[in-house]
Image 1 (tube, rainbow, N blue to C red):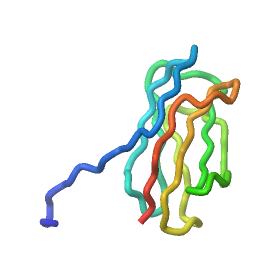
Image 2 (tube, rainbow, N blue to C red):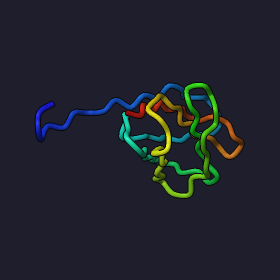
Image 3 (cartoon, rainbow, N blue to C red):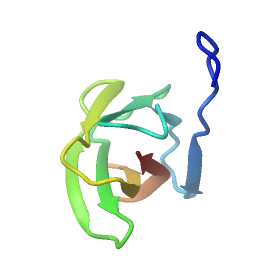
Length: 102
């Protein structure tokens, strides 16, 4: 890697589920070191939440999303692959992101 040169990070969306709920979300950076930012675009839906799970499907944390941008602290987790689910008010999965922690 050259000093001063920015290399783009790949954001992997591993699932997009069809439902009556339409939302556009992005996560960055990916891979991460200690935290990931979940950013919701228009339209922003109330009672949208996220759920973080490890590669074995174990639920690690979840929260209701109150703002367009949420910081998910992953500093206490080991280097691995994680999945960040964006959920509707009815707990329907809207999007799934594959997060790589280095």
